[in-house]
Length: 448
Image (cartoon, rainbow, N blue to C red):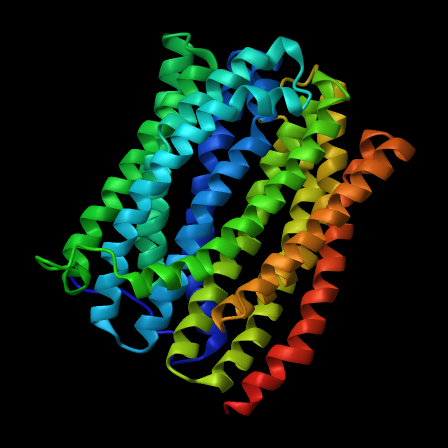
C-alpha cells in the first residue's frame, strides 16, 4: 500500500496546514458524533431525564478522554520530531513503548473510574432522578476505555507521520456503525442509556481495529521487529515529559468543567438538558479549533526536529490566519442556526431548555477566535519543547473559568455562567502571547 503522508518540512505552510487540517476537522467531527448521536437518540427516543443523565456525565467523560488524549498527544509530538529527523528506529521504539502505555492506561482508568464514579456524580450535584442512569452510562464507558485509548494513540501516530486521512476513514465507518447500533439498541431493544453506551464502545473498537490494520500494512518499516517489543526507557521518559503536562493540563480543564457542571446542575433538570444540547453543538465547533491545533503540533514538531526554524514562524502566521477565518465562519453559522441545531436533541415543546441552549451557543461561539488562538500557541510551545507553559496556561484558564462561573451565576443566574468561557480564553491568550514574545520567540531566533 502506498504511503499517503504529508511532509511538513517542505512546501507552503498555509497550504500544508489547510490540506492536513481538513481531514482532521472531519475526523474530529465524526468522533464527536459518538456522544452527539447518543444524546440525540436518548433525547428524542427515551426521555428528557435520559438526555439530562447523559449530559450530567459530560465533565467526567471529558476527564477520561483528557487523560487518554494527554498521553497520546505526548506520543504524537515525539513521533513528529523523529519523523522530521528521519529517525525510523526511533519511531519503532515509540510504537513498542506506546503499546505498554496503552495497556497500563486502560487498566488504571477502568479501576479508578469504577471506584470513583458514584462519589463524583454526587459531588457534582447530579439530580437524584437521573443519578442511576448517569452512573450506568459512565460504568460502561470506563469498562470499555481500551477502545478509545487504542484508537487515539494509533490515529495520533499516523497524523504525526503526515497521514490525517486514515483516522478520518476509520471514524466515518465507526460513526455510521454507532448511529445504526444506537437506534437498534434503543428503539428495538429498549436499552436506554446502556444501549447508547454499548453502541459507542463497539463503534470505537471498530475504529481502533481499522487503524491498526492500516498501520501494519502501510507503515511496515515502523512496526517493531522480533526482540524490539520492549519499553525504551529514554523514549518512555520523553513521552512522559510531554504526556504528563498534557494530561495534567486536560485534567485541570476537566476539573474546571466539573465545577461548572456542578453549578449548572444546581439549577435543575431543564437547565442541565439545555446546556447538554447546546454543549454538543459547541463541541462540534470547538473541533475546528482543536483540529488546527493538532495540525500545528505536527507541523511544528516535524520542522523543529528538522531544525527549520523559519518555517515555524511562517507556520504560526498561517495558522493564526486560518483560525480567524474559521472562527468567523463558525460564529455566523451557529448564531444564525442555533435553534435548529438544538432541536436535533429535544422536542420543540421544551421551551425553557431550548432557550438555555441557544443563549449558551450565541455567547460562546461569538468568541471562538480566542479559543483558536489559545490552541495555536499551546501547540506551538509544546512542539518546541516548552511543555510546562501550556499546563500553566490551563491553570490560569481553570481559575478564571471557575471564578467567573461562580460569581456570575450568583449575580446573573445560569445565563451568567456562559461568560466564563470567553473571558477565560482571553486571559489565557494574553498569557501565552506574552510568554511566546518574551521567551520562546527570542530563543528560536537564536537558532536561525
